[in-house]
Image 1 (cartoon, rainbow, N blue to C red):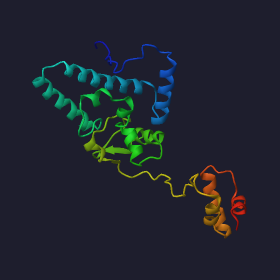
Image 2 (cartoon, one colour):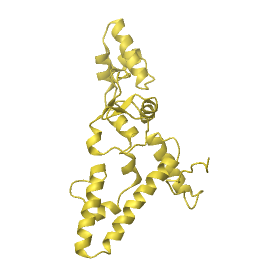
Image 3 (tube, rainbow, N blue to C red):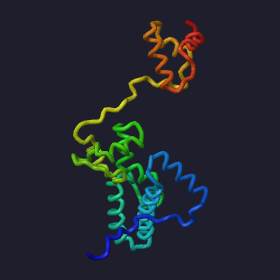
Image 4 (tube, rainbow, N blue to C red):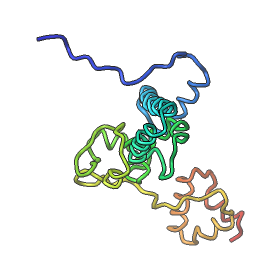
Length: 214
């Protein structure tokens, strides 16, 4: 039967596993993008490191040979969405891990509004509710280029989520404005009270109306 198939590791583990600053940074990134594990961060760092290494190698090449390879590398990264239209080698050397995480399918589904959170976006993808160019994709870490980004949609029937139909009360709004928009009928007061609960406000509508002046 032969030896079992062995998958090559696609990321580099940290050289100093207990470095406090790195751990805090990775925890922050993992929480922001709702990643399953830190291996996804290490995988993105390895890819970014590879692109930086290629850019540094081009610096030492002769001008005529460098121009052609530099153009190909920049065009490749522009297609992925990592670089802008007028990018240079310096822009490649300044790439961050967050730049690549922004191109993951999970992040794009979230940013396009198909999911309310990054965690929910991951769930939709894994459960087979998201399609790329008409084909179901169940890999949250898939890198989406700029052309395919427009073709990220629901797979078959859309999943209806609770959108922000209830108005979110901003901190800048005054008590008087909230009380004025709350309404005078019992039904309107109940609706306004529900808004306050959703927004994390502890005050009741009666207290707001009293402070604002009926």
